[in-house]
Image (cartoon, rainbow, N blue to C red; front, top):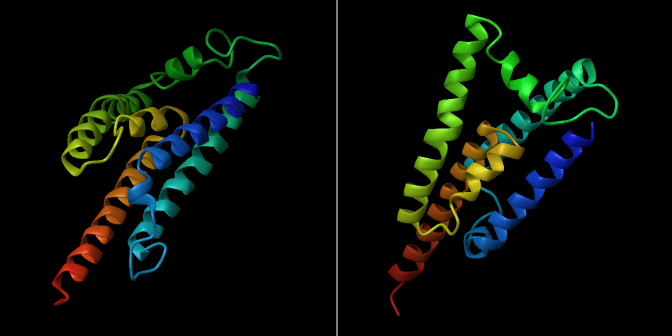
Length: 163
């Protein structure tokens, strides 16, 4: 159970790091609500993925871990968690897909796209996925893009006002 708490704390710390690194993006856009409908949808989806993931992770730890066991190797560990993801062809199909999207596509996309958009430390979205969920990392990134778009739209509207 301690490993789940550590994961949650690390997840929150990485999210705080992302927000602080991009304080300008997370500032309230001029002339609009604190969150757009689309941002809210992204956040709800992301948070739901964390809740579901932690629910199933808690069940895994509860069923497999032994008191005082090693969270890296042995019963109820990361090693066993990964092995069970490949326990049968159906699970292996889902696990390989998840692994590729989380370990290859998420960092590739967020780092390249983030640098193009001026997002600071975009690699942190991948780090966040290690402690939250892949779906949360994508939803959070998409919410950041939406927030950035709203800032750009507000700036363009202000620039269009004749002096």
